Image (cartoon, rainbow, N blue to C red):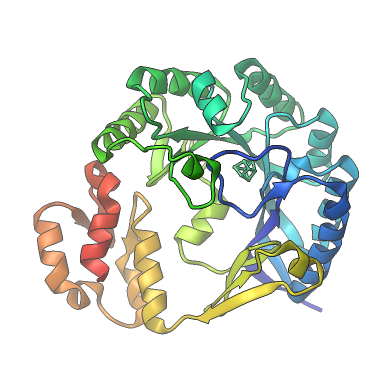
Length: 364
Ligand code: SF4
């Protein structure tokens, strides 16, 4: 039987070896009591996609590298029927063993994302993570040994009392490594995280803005260009998988609290591990009207440096963007908040930090 080719599949592995103080993802400490049962449940859930193959498969978490060697191999085998020369990405933590990296080569993993966040001792102690510069350097060499060069590091900023000098030290270290991509995350205080329970205070918006601008300018000088509000790529190594989301294209999702968007239905899985293990995967679904689809197309598309294509908008929604949004657009264009360049409408690169403000003006 011919399978239908879909853009992307997200696979959630909720286990971690340590819990970070800022984290509100669906995760739990690794325990082999649950991990093997979880992988069996995941295999069963995947059956809903038996008619599909996916161009991109993203294994995220949690920490997928917290699985044992055997579990990781099991997972890669479970995913084989859903592949057709697929581009596979996996998230790892710095403490991964070489044996598991060998598996990446065997199962054709093309991209690796490493949760570094910072090399600053005070920040690492605050967020309860370990990242050692020499270890990361060695890990990158190991990945290269197994032909993985498309490497992302996550960087966090937005900490109270974090100086621009400290941020510069981190950025210098990050960009001295042989990597192609940096994803930045501004610290947020989410409910039921340790930081929130500690009543940690975030810095003022003005300080965060200075940090963001500093990052953008620093990375540009080092050849990492922003292509999405928080993502920077060198040599055009943009995240193929995340572009599926920002382009509002279809994707499947399996695992605890994973989401999918296929045939204009957004489905979200349960956060409850016991329910998931019993086979009650889905929590809720939302059927998107044409208005909803238009909202997401604009909201996600304007996150990208090149913004949205007006001809694509017309093809999808059978109307002219410039006419539909004329009233709201006039001011935004006059103030050079948004820029119209032939077929593309995008946010002024100097004003990307306040993207949400423009989205509110345009969409509400
Ligand atoms: S941030 Fe990542 S590694 Fe840390 S607890 Fe959350 S999922 Fe686990």
